[in-house]
Image (tube, rainbow, N blue to C red; front, side):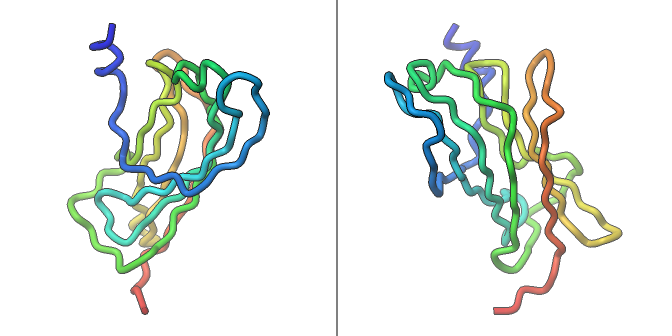
Length: 147
């Protein structure tokens, strides 16, 4: 069983928790909360994305057994000179984190809009059988970095 869980669990793309707020008090286990995390695009130097999403608390949440909600918000920003570390593929996953024990993940994918010279990031939740249409999008025009 542990092998199945290990194989089904996507690798964390190095998200750093920036902060959180409590939304629902729980008598047992941690409270439900909204967390704000930051991660850098692994192939685009100079881009950081900020993701806010719900984390389920309670006894199941504290043990990592609860299923988190599918809703998320994203804002990606240019934080330095943009340099590409490799070829970019449209729809390439840049962040992935499980939101249930085995079957559900929250992920961010990147697209490159060549016509507008803009990077577009989409966050959504997927599940082995049925995903969610809930999503959010953000875009970064590629501009010269002036300090």
